[in-house]
Image (cartoon, rainbow, N blue to C red; front, top):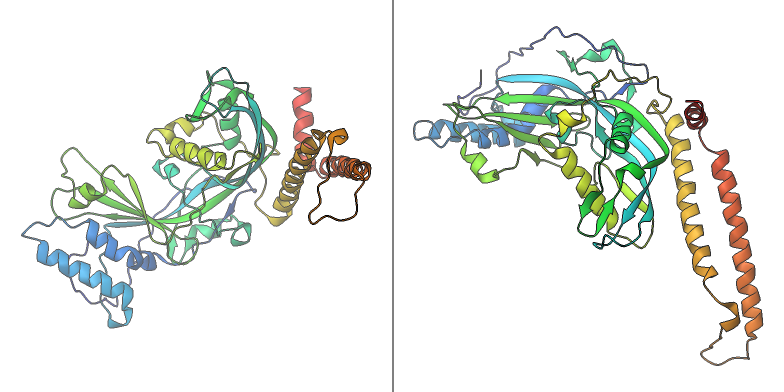
Length: 424
């Protein structure tokens, strides 16, 4: 039951509820982030917010609600005094499936509202991107802080289903990023509009490399029941590090009235609170063409709106079982990640070098004029032209070596997948 006793001191009793859950048959490639703190810490962390958003401001309960809010604030910021925070009606520790994505993709895109303009080939890098792995509502929010790395994970074992004395509910993977990419190409009927000046053709998407790492993210789901016929409140707390970011979600019903807090937040569905990373969960970086500095942010906003839509979880959920035997599914370890990131960095170097060579190649060496200030000895334009040609030749050789190095460093599993596509 929800504690509504206002300024109640902590009880010495420490009750723990355990449930019997079936554990999905996770593939050995799946890694998990251990829970960094017990649910009691999560409850205390969100206590002042929970006590605020569940207030009905009813004359009959306002004194009790204010006492509960004060007690929750003291419990969080002055724990030595011994007050108890507001208690949820139900607490559930949860492992939510997620994907970390490293990829390089190309597509035809337009950076003009004019439909007659020719498309450009755009190259995009996704590094450390976060995609949901299960089609429940949590798919619409980011649950992996940008500071989390593979060093924070360990191979999933049944021992991880019980932590801090609580049994963990483990959800299955039912969203595949590899399938989503195929569906985007195969089922698209037109150009995707990012904004008025940026469009791309999903059917033209070509993956130069993609690595998908399956991970389990720890969260606590806290459910609060306000006094009276009001909407229930669910708070989702990230548990991969010290208590920080969490989300407030109002659960409406046909016979329930909206809480005053809902009127304040308006149409917001999952309200992010606490310390939060500012980096986009998808982290797209358009490396070519380099003349579009804002396009990466525009693409991030478009992807965020797509995934955060209320109907997105159903659209993203696969109709088939998720196969992790695909060689593009990798274990999230440094041994797997570093070669991919090195290969992607070589791609950036290639794009930069090609751009430089393209710029130099437009220079007409016969029309070079040398201006010196302050005036010095007369410089022979022919020597300048010869130097420019020498630089051009050196950059061409550097480009050739970069291409050879990148080809040689292509991960063996990606070459294996490419070969498998040729035989199909």
